[in-house]
Amino acid sequence: MLRGLLYDTPEYFHALNWLGKPQASDHFAYVLRELPWGDIDARGSWPYQTFPDDAHIDKLTSGILFDGVKPLIPLTWTGVIRPDFPVDELNQRLLNLKNRHRVHCTPLKSHLGHLPGVSPAHKSFSARTRRRLSLAEKTFFVDVGSSLTEIYEALGAWQDELRVERGIPRCSSPDQDHFAGLHRIAIKTPECLLAIELRRRSDRALRAAFLLTKESGRNTSWHAHSLLSREDARRCFGTYLLFVAVIDHLGCDPIWWGGQPAGLNGPGVFRFKQRFSNASAYAHLVSIDLHPERLRAVRASYPLHAWLPDYRDPQEEMKR
Image 1: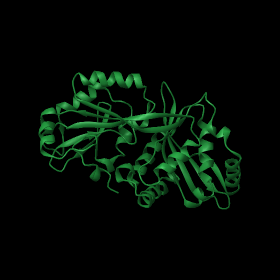
Image 2: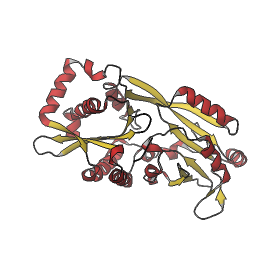
Image 3: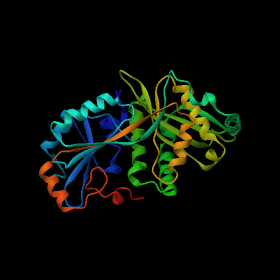
Image 4: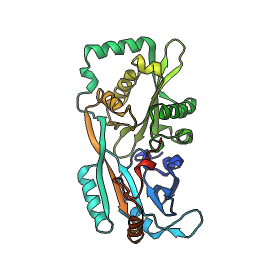
C-alpha cells in the first residue's frame, strides 16, 4: 500500500517521463531536465506535491550522475507545493532553507476544493442547474469505483485531443505513457486511484471520466488528477453529474479539484469548478538555488525572465 500523497511517490514519478528524466533516491523523487547549454536542473511532481524534506534538497548539492557522465549539481529545484499544505509550516520550511540556500516562493494560483463540515456547494444549486442535472440523468449514469484497466488508453487519447483542441502547453498535459504508468500503479495498489465514469444509458458507452488520487495515512484526502469528457457529455451537462457523484461518495474527506488550467478555456473551467466548491487555497511555486557559483555565471550569460527558475524562457516552457 502506498502511503501519503501519491504525487510524492517514486512510483508516480516514474510516470512523468514527458517532463524529463525521473529519478528516485532515499524516498525522494524528482525530475531532471537538461538545459540547452549543458547544465541540468530538477523539478518536482505534477500537478503538485508536498514540500520535500530539507535533507533531500541538501543532498542534491552533492551532485547527480547524469547520463553516465561526471556528477553534476542541478542549478535549482523547482516545484509546486500542494494547496492544502499548512501556510505556517510552509513559511517555517522556507525560513529553514534560507539559512543554506537562496529560495524563491510565490503564490501560483488558487485551487478549489470541497471540505467536509461545510455545506456542500451543490446543495444550494439554482432551479436552473437542478433542471440541467435532471436532464443529464435521463441520458447518462455514473459508475463509481471502476477499474483503470478498461479506460486508461481512452483517457490518454482524450487528454491528447484536449491538449490540441484547447492549446494546452505540453508541460501541463500528460501523455499516453503517463496514463499507462497510472494503470501499472492501480494494478499494484488499486486503493490509491479512483475512476468515476459517466456512461450513456442507451449503450453504456464511456462519455467522461473523473480520475482522483487518494492520500492515505494519518489523514485522508482526495486530489483530482484528470476530468476528461466527450463533447456530448459537456453539452448535456453530464460533467455536473460527475462532480456531484464525487462529493456524494467522497465528501466525508477533503477533495481538491485543482486550479485554473492553462489555455484559452481555463477561466471557464475554473468558473465551472466553483459551482462545486466550498473552499479555496493557493498552491505555491518554490524554486531553490542549489549551485550558487554556476548560477552566477548562467545568470550573467543568458537572458533572465519573470519565471521560476529565472533562466528558463517561458515561451519555450509553455510551448503547445
